[in-house]
Amino acid sequence: MLDAGHRLRSANKAAMNAFGDQVAAVLRHPDLRAAMARALAGGASEAAEISLPVPVERTVQATVLAPGRTVPGATVLVLSDRTRERAVERMRADFVANASHELRTPLASLIGFIETLRGPAADDPPAQRTFLGIMAREAARMQRLIDDLLSLSRIELVEHQPPSGRVELADLLNTLLPGFAPRLAERRTEMALSLSPALPQIIADPDQLSQVLHNLIDNAIKYGREDGHIEIRAEASDRGVVLSVADDGPGIPRQHLPRLTERFYRVDQGRSRAVGGTGLGLAIVKHIVNRHRGRFTIESTEGEGTTCRVWLPAAGQPEDPSA
Ligand SMILES: Nc1ncnc2c1ncn2[C@@H]1O[C@H](COP(=O)(O)OP(=O)(O)OP(=O)(O)O)[C@@H](O)[C@H]1O
Ligand SMILES: [Mg+2]
Image (cartoon, rainbow, N blue to C red):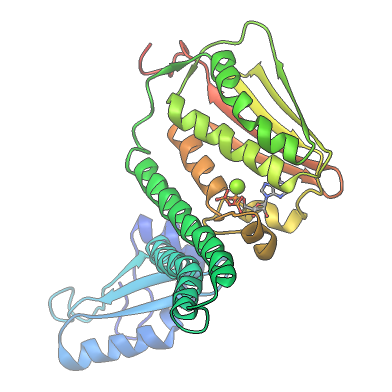
């Protein structure tokens, strides 16, 4: 509440907690002053969205209540911090833009080749074969992208609802790992599994957990080095199990690490595309681990390799809702 001279007269606790050291900056803000002048002139409520640059950028919705309706001679402001909402809106807009862009690239190539097949290459079977090969690859890429987007949105739908299944990791790994043999052979990479004895069962959705392992191992093969070595470990830790996938590839420069789980974020766009990546693999891992109330970390040293770790709670713990 401001007095007639627009000096602070009183503020509730929430306002002081949120804006205490920045009240002066808020009250000085030209957009807020303009809203106060409009409210005073028009006798109705007026709002302004102002941004506070320091100490961290915040977006504040300020409403000047209709003068006359409140305390005589005073101006009452309602401030609400909208930083989070704005960030979510921005992320949503970025996501739509990124997803459209990712789909547009292969689509443009398909359209281009269709034109070529109808025109210049209409009577050229060898060229037709080459182009159809490229078209099949581009179409498969679009299909993968859509599958990943759908699986991401399915996971998000149930993210607040933790899984209730029990998983025996040894069984899961022993079923999953043989499927990688052909790709490992192609890259002449060895994969070793080290399972601690007597691992507890974990609470997990087996399909989602398989997807986590699949995405991490897929990355280790794709971005690790040729003739490399991949190590998969599972060990009991802190009332749960830590699963790790380590490669001895070129690693990831430090500055990229915090952003790797963002949708479509890739360290090297060209390389990821060339190996058929959509940039969604780690985002899917993050959401699945969140749903499992687990933890996901990525450590990497350039020139030495990358280790991804997933901690998941063991079954039968006090926080286990099914216990
Ligand atoms: N083990 C790794 N070593 C080096 N870089 C990695 C490793 N794992 C991931 N990255 C980098 O992180 C990026 C994001 O990985 P992510 O799995 O999310 O996407 P992707 O592999 O490009 O596509 P997708 O997994 O959807 O096929 C990759 O493009 C790559 O640059
Ligand atoms: Mg990947």
